[in-house]
Length: 535
Image (tube, rainbow, N blue to C red; front, top):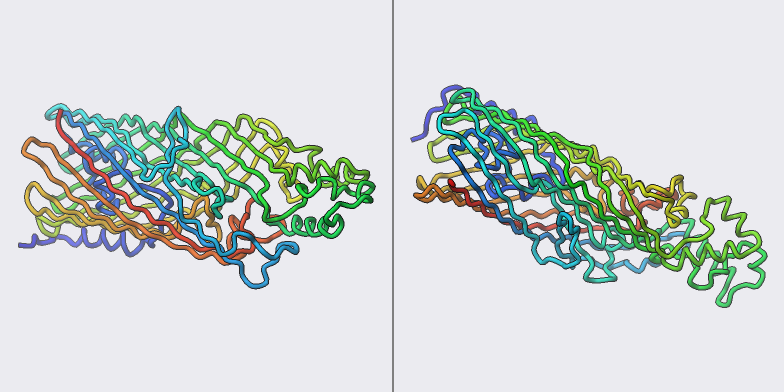
């Protein structure tokens, strides 16, 4: 028999959360943090399970009694694909055939970041992760203490298998990973219905980027065409008394579609603390309300960088400075007098970890049926740009002074992300007192606007569908399983994303697919299991 809903408050809560809040979403928030949460569309703020409460709502730790241990195991498979098309009228400074036209990138593997070790070179068919949690509560005490290990943020794309992968100019390898390895937390139960909790997650933040570079810019194309006309096949003896456009030989001929070099970064923040604050109110057995604030951080990472310069720019500069008038032109444009083949050193960067707010309701219209709904907001607007600060001027970057990049000791990569709201829905059915089945639905409108999307973060709108189950044995051991699938697609016509394919003169950093139509998508399959038991 259905239990009567005495006041309409629960219904009003659901309407407020689902009707007022638009379907907006973030990047990688909680994609694979908890098997229980993922199986319920991450709508668990009013019903946090076990040690997941450390992250989703620390107040929920008061539900744990005695000494409890949990082990979590995850596996994920991510596939990204992109296709490049050259539209009618394509022209980059006179060059009209881009060699990536008509090609598709689809052969990526997974990559992870290991503390101390860094990002392994081995390609992973499946990314794996594990978590561990402990909690302590004296019988009858309102206090519960806990700590947990989990991954609140992770993305790892490895395109290194094919050295000619057309997407290699925006990431042969991209890894962003945050691992919480300790999270001292405490919860206090004020009454049978009200609890609060506080946690301090201490995380290791890892970042790795390895990408080939090319600069399909109008000026580079015009200069390359001028070289072809002025120098011919065998050079021009008069050129020595002019600008030295031919002095670099055929290797020094500028081509907007030719690889200019490679850059790679690897940086970490070994210990970056944040703050979680949660409230849980359960005024009736059929109704629960929860709220959590997860603080952000201006995470400062330190590490190493390396730039490799291919012959094109190196030989071009050598030819200019070996001529009569070339040094004058080079100094006017701010070109370096030479470009070393390899240059590296120490770097720092700020990689903001965005703050997150989540509000949720739990409603049981029937003793065996539970509905969860959460509204979530993440401050991805902090990612307006990423700045890499180097310990010296990078000679290869000095070539970009002409395009407004005044300081070659730093590299600024525009992002322009947005802070979004979105919602999640969960359904739980108690088939028997020991067995529960779960379903989740989470539509996410990407925090990466269409005019900012690129292949470093190919995150379009996603729709996540999940299933799960929970079984509790007579011994008190509980096994929770969750699995999710998600797909998303994007279509970016030429000149619509200036992080990807703009042809504007000053958008040299960084639009490696200038003038091309780029389409693609992302597909993620992931599953996990948590085993919770007294100890």
